[in-house]
Amino acid sequence: MISKDKVRKQRLSDRDALEEKYRKEASQRIVDRLRESEAYKNATHVLSYMSYRSEVETKDFNREVLRDGKNLYLPRTYPKDFSMFFYKVEDLNKLIKGNYGILEPVGFKTFFEEKESENIPKERVLLILPCVSFDRKGNRMGYGAGYYDRYLKKMKDSFQKLALAFESQEALIIPCESTDERVDGIITEKEWIKIS
Image (cartoon, rainbow, N blue to C red; front, side, top):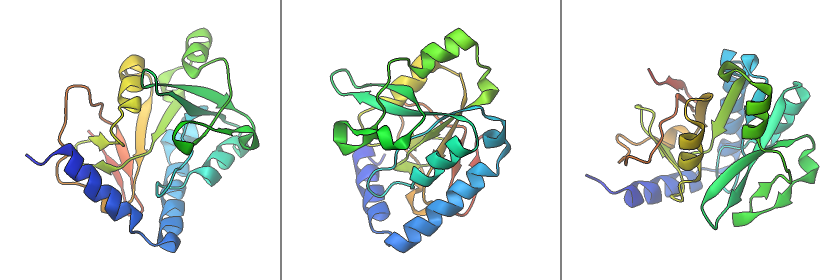
């Protein structure tokens, strides 16, 4: 079986090779498809990410989440134990450059703490994940540090999980391990791949 490192390296190379104009236009199509979905419309709490390098761009999407009156949460990473927590964001101008050069929130109360105290139903929560590669079984590959896999394992089945990716990032098979967590769907510029 092909190694994860080989798949990761190839798909990152494919993503980086996309022309900037195409990446911007494709990102907009992906975000439009997401915002038109029932999953987004029904969500009152959106856990998103700040795009980095050649990822599907989410800066404008995050602004739209706030304009739509939804609660926006972004991740902050802790490399010491490879953990990650989401914090509420009300002003995208107040993010700071964190680990790996990615903009991160400054916060004290995590989404998990809010979810427990407010008893937020899972159909009101939507988690948007970045992606290096994916397959049609819902397997998603990140950069390899396992931040999202650890977070998802801890949260269990607390919300719908959608990965954003360009069509060129698809792999026939993603080599999986027991620690890998699947997503409920992948949105590309061409289609919404729903995982049954």
